Length: 103
Image 1 (cartoon, rainbow, N blue to C red):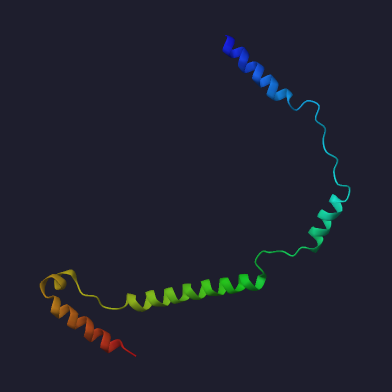
Image 2 (image 1 turned 30 degrees about the vertical axis):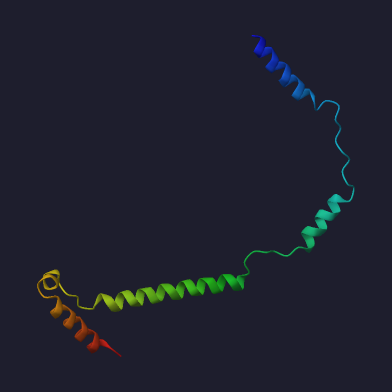
């Protein structure tokens, strides 16, 4: 019980340590300074030009990805049985397909 009273005394001392303190006076020109800063500051966000450039790059990458997927989707691939039975023949078939489709 004695410990509880010591804790309560300590809490009362800490809470009472702010008694008698007064607020410091505010700077009379502070509001004007803040408002001037707000009026004269420029936005540091993205400009519309930067946003358009980022969007254009994203669309370009998407188009390249879709074109690549369509191009390679029609390409013949070796079956798993061919790969296991004769890897040399599979490589030769792939090389001949590449040479036929080259630009």
